[in-house]
Amino acid sequence: MARVTTAGVFLFWPNLIGYSRVILAAAACALMRTHPVACMWTYIVSCLLDAADGHVARYMNQCSRFGAVLDMVTDRSTTTCLLAYLTTVYPQYLLVFQLLMALDLSSHYMHMYSSLVGGHASHKEIDQ
Image (cartoon, rainbow, N blue to C red):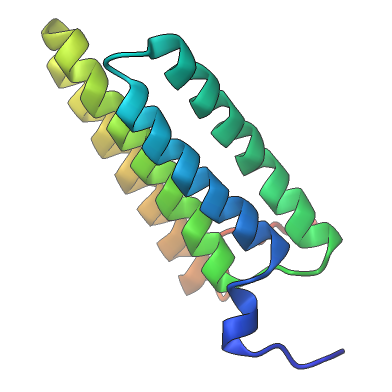
């Protein structure tokens, strides 16, 4: 197996998919208030790419800690941005959306932390 440099990890196919997810998430945030249908489709494509990047990483043997962190940070950011926007549209549900944000962030942190404490290289590892 060829040695992969640190810079090479940034150009792994799953990470390129991850960068496109970041761009789509930013576009979705920009479209939320003025173009909700375009926002929805942009967000959906970003979610579909989220499902694809893991499969591509495993298929091409390009799993990396950087990719796992990029994926998790993008997921948490897009979810938080969506919930924050929903608080402006439905202010009567502010507490519900705040609790959902806290639950999303804390549960994923605990999952990641327990995986690393358990000796796994990544929170994405799954025992067969």
